[in-house]
Image (cartoon, rainbow, N blue to C red; front, side, top):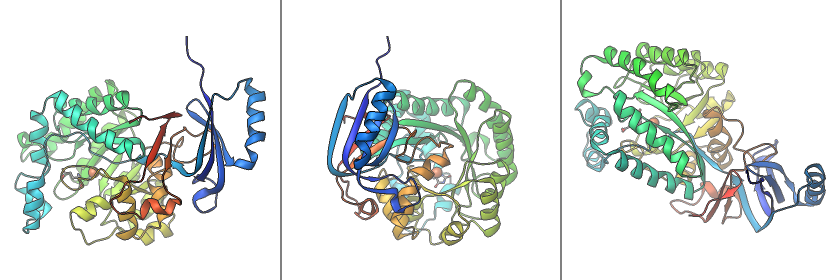
Length: 415
Ligand code: DI6
Ligand code: FE
């Protein structure tokens, strides 16, 4: 027997719907009607009675729950569209080395960096990998993240990439937040393939079908840069993804302009991420293919980069811009989505509204999802009730977490 879906009313709220053309999709005195996991109506409270009677007449159902939010702010649930949550160990020592003058590239070339996390990941047990990633996901969820993307990329062998992706999948089964998995096996060259990058790419292309057959892969990503993989190698990974009908994304133009964005756009990529060194032709190619520009201010900040992504051009060309934590132990060891909104504004000069759209509706687009990221009829009932007055505060407070009641697919998350 299936339990009937709950019909619930959430009223007396200030809604930043991000729907419609007005700033923030603002509804000063708002309400929402939620049927099971879906928003059936969101709008001015003055229209609630009429909407309720329409719904009750159409469905023959009664209201199961009414929540008076006392004038609190409600936004769509946050979508963190780029994370590397599954890994062993940490790299605080490398942070110290960088402060003493070593560059991220120097450390990577000397066998540290991603490779040191690969070693720690391979020796971690399944339980340890899962538990540490679960704790990180819980932290994000408690701060308003209702959908998270999790990449592999620290296993770098068929066996260890599968272990990481299984851990990621399980998080979506254990927690109420939605998880999208991305296979990033082309993240770095593992030591056993030293000097044989093309052979490693062959191996990645060969193991991808099995990972996909196990239901572990929602998208395929690669790191295209001078310390990682070339455009030609990236192309081969993308061709393998295409053969399986999987969408692609790319760590593109983070440390140098390799033409990665144009290559990804050729494959209709969902997103290109980082983009500090993106040029005008890359922007044009992304625009033509409808690729989302994912900006990662945490990595920019933590690596003390000085070259800014071409924000004005992205804005002028109307590309959707997303913001994510890029949580990883090497370049962005943060689990604070709101700090990323703040940094998107202070470092990248986004407006607070652009930043919030970047972690909701545009973050969803970067994952190929159009069913979430706004408060509107037909959207998944993923939303957050904040202890704040106005949505511009989400990007304003630095390093403080306002209270957040988190609702995933119509159900309030209990901590
Ligand atoms: N770019 C990054 O910033 C992360 N991966 C990537 O391709 C860093 C990953 C790490 O340093 O562990
Ligand atoms: Fe990343």
